[in-house]
Length: 71
Figure 1 (cartoon, helix red, strand yellow):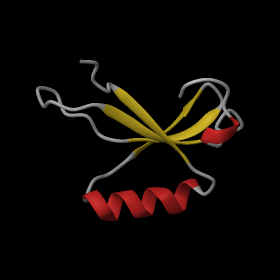
Figure 2 (cartoon, one colour):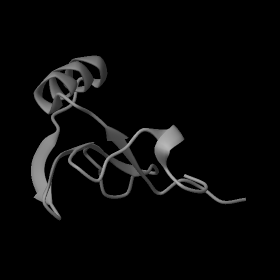
Figure 3 (cartoon, one colour):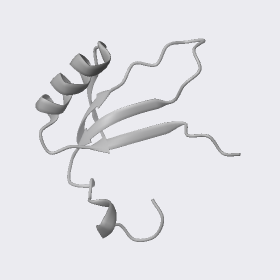
Figure 4 (cartoon, one colour):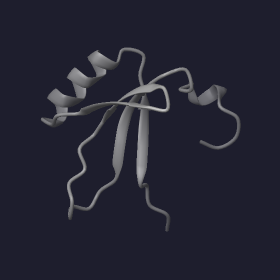
């Protein structure tokens, strides 16, 4: 069985999404610029099972139904 190791949630309003997820999960997201995209990284703790993830705002983000092939 394959497991998820990373996820990205596309957002239009990054600051609003950061406030929402920080309040929902009681965490602090780390802001970053990766490959020209504004992102907010979910915390990943050493020695704790789980996957990494991020909120992503940028031109490369698209709606699922416009992406070619499997996503």
